[in-house]
Length: 395
Ligand code: NAD
Ligand code: MG
Image (cartoon, rainbow, N blue to C red; front, side, top):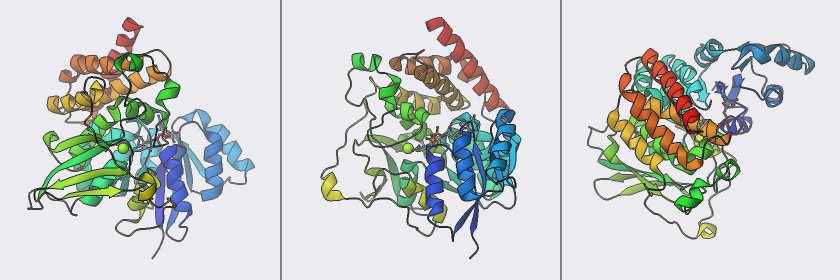
């Protein structure tokens, strides 16, 4: 069998680095054709040295000259340096690529991820914001393009593993609902007053997972779980009433599927993203991911509790966005990106994140539909503008 040719979008991030770690364990199976990054040139050059891609792509043209110089100095002048959205779309869709790891963070990842789906690639989907913003468009593009979608978000990967494949809800497979587990984040037991005073340093220190800064803050506010509810709604084509969030602080069960006969299937493992990444790369086969085997005696117990909508209103906002439908999820996502950046910048209190998100959704969502990429992009822009204004009024 020939090797699978892979593009990694967002290779310098947490998921990107874990992906390259798994790939490096299996040089007989995978080779890297293209890498992309935003700003960490040192890391990108080092990844180029190890993986020898054909392309290295930057989000912005600003660093191109410097990257070319550094690659030349490293004896890697043959690597082609490109920049910008069209270049990202190109490396996601070019014919010589078999699989695309979509691991850019935020709305910036949407267009290249869509390009991979349209081009019929095996899409390893980590960038949940694509599905939150453009769920229906993206699922249609993947179907029409003949893409194979493999969820990398650990919960959705777990659900995928616990569902019959191919999953067809109308075919008597007996799925009643899915149980999306949530760690509860670092502030699970904090009071309302404590939540008002938390710092960015506390918020990015997740108890179980090591992740990028944006998703870590989202995990702390439960917005991440909300985004994942929307993600699940589109990936598995399930009505929101059939998605239940269960707080499970140990993060050992990555999610579950409940069947009509009373069976509940769960996928367990250590909280290490290399498991879902390896699953996505090798599916339907399995490969070694370098993950420590689960030691149930050491874990000893598994706990479950209901999420608290009072202290963590972001989860409810996601269900509200699904109820409002149209561009509401895209608006919520954009507002939240502004809110998280402001919180990390110490311009917004942690407990004001849901306030900003709710106000923006209420003010902006109804003016846009989800029928086209243009409309969703306009909704995203309008939401960011509204959120910026809200921030300056509440500073
Ligand atoms: P990260 O911040 O560690 O990395 C983000 C990557 O995207 C980096 O390579 C960065 O250079 C690139 N990037 C950032 N802004 C960009 C822009 N404007 N244009 C192009 N590239 C840009 O993030 P992460 O934790 O690796 O998460 C990546 C995605 O995977 C997110 O959508 C996140 O929700 C999802 N995800 C992550 C985890 C995890 O464990 N880290 C788990 C589930 C899902
Ligand atoms: Mg997740």
